[in-house]
Length: 500
Image (tube, rainbow, N blue to C red; front, side, top):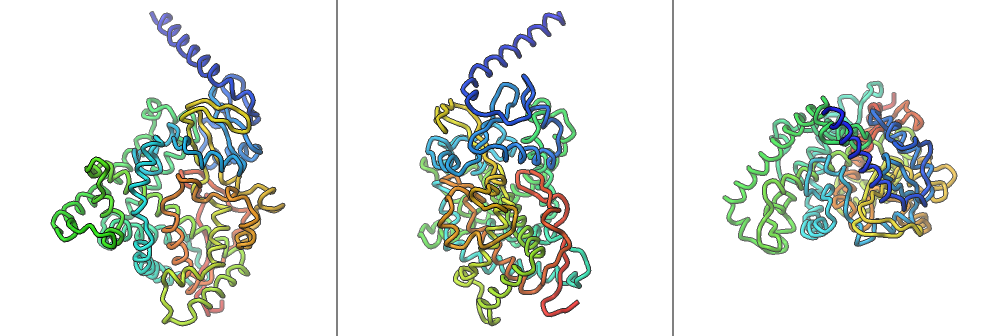
């Protein structure tokens, strides 16, 4: 009986293997990235790797692709895209919004990042677009500034020019506080458990990154047997309990505030925070979002906005510490715009920080917060003359895209904000730079992130000179949904005007 069972299982696997291999014969026209093993493809190369090693391998593989290449998961090809022409094609197609199975690993269902159905995503994006409008973002600036000033006060005790400071430790807390205040209208000082929440976000992101990069974690049945699964689930329970309590509490408050629920004028709706808006949104059928759907959207915004913005600011400050001459140019611009304490930090003054924005963009070029994106074909498409059938996975690596010498010059690793002068941007392919993805399925919170980044950089650099012994060659990265530095963002802070 055992032999019959094993034979049956073996034949079933053989049938599935041959079926996938037959369906994937189109990919013979696409170069296979080397090295590769017969039958099993690249699976052994990625098997059991941590998030640092796995990202390094994928970066090496993607950098060997000019336009199209493929990684083989056994008989199944994963198509790697690495040219701006093809990026523009896949990101702007109206029939290519679907996402592949591993977005389910995020555990955020119908959230804007993880909704796999392109048709459902288009509908959600349409009704959620107004939640990040210009009026609301402008109203958030004083809140962002207030939380940033509090962070600067906490950092000031360490600004002796000798103490090593991990920037991300402080910026991460501040970024999360800003997201709590702006997306949920909650006073971050009153939210008990927010530090535990932040730590649990890190745990979940690490586990999801590990699953995406390792074939041995991709099968749900096998992953559930691992210790990593238990750690992830424990962290997710904390996240759910924290976020859902806020949702339930705010629903009750809105039900009591009749003056809020009856108003429906455009000005009022544009001044509400994100949570209030999604609680009040009505779908085409007249119903609102369920608590589970609200959780998906809110958790997506909180985790994505806080983590990506914190990384952007910490990375930018680290680069500025490595390049004191560029740091001084930023400070000079800040002094020119904010030449008096009476000058208000607002939409207009933030808009005048043009060189500071170039610096942020260059930091995002070298360290894109979301370095990898994937799509799944919902119908047959043609790329570079190759007919690609339905249900095939396409993967783009923005980390390698942003380092192509043919678009970024002979030294693409060099930190140079002048790459983002208006003249330089005009001459470059519009899809050679994709820190917030591109096309219609781009990041809904990109303006929120840029506002927050500028405000944090302004207040930190007005108060401190940032120094470091680290070199850019010391920077190593890992993939944990976002691109994270291995080790701390280690700097020393010196109060402006204090000579040590």
